[in-house]
Length: 321
Image (cartoon, rainbow, N blue to C red; front, side, top):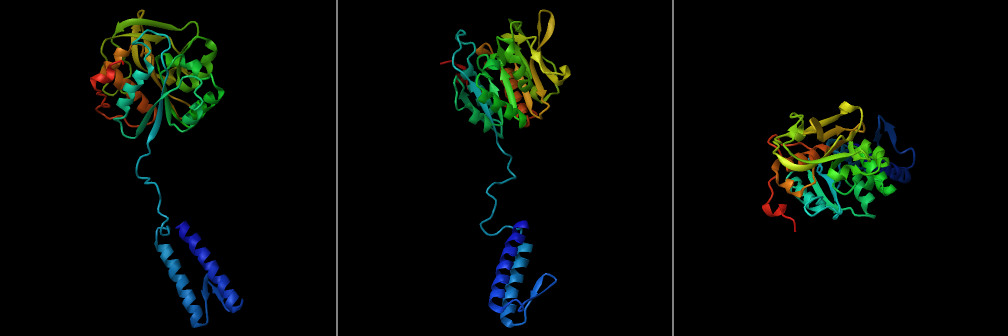
């Protein structure tokens, strides 16, 4: 309607100006917003104007060729960057960042409304800030992620902008880590938890993770199996303590330890973390793939199917080349 009013106002102004030039300022009187003419010629002009006005008011306000280019009825696609690196010195079949995220991408590709892109983010990664600015979320599965996160000030600023606009932030295994404690403070407010500093704790054990919060969407149809894994624990979490929701726990040294979590940040965004991810073979477990994939969907504020996300992958997708 606003477009129609603007268009007809422009048209009326053109007719008014033309008539004033042709007939003089006294030729047309204005009454209740309409021009009243005294001659047949002017009546024709007036009739054309009225028809144009009525047509505009009865239309939806768009002129021919002014239809919207985007169908707003369709849900927008959320874009998530799966950030990996090459080998970091760990033995083969551990810390397989690229291969692990290829499996995660296969699972996310089955979910409507998400576009997952796997990107190698080895240093110096100059394209990083621009890619992050175009994304709705990121997943870090790389070496010493809490340090990598702030190695480049432009990268740090881009990730902070992502968080400030409510973007999703996910982190797996060493992607949440750092050896030096000085990297913890900037990382935790965005990702919710960190395996950092000289006092960081980790342990290799065989255990069946416990679902700590069955009603949380991320845990939909997540049925853990016993796995051998290197879990990070006694993590540094964001405060207040109850704001970070434990999703998976493992008994370590006689006490339940949080190894998977979800956090709704004060900025309106969401964060998810899983401290497993050491042994590549564990991606062969359906619960493992579902837990991580649904964690990513949740950070993007996308619905999780009540039957759980379909995370079946071909057997060859699990093999390392």
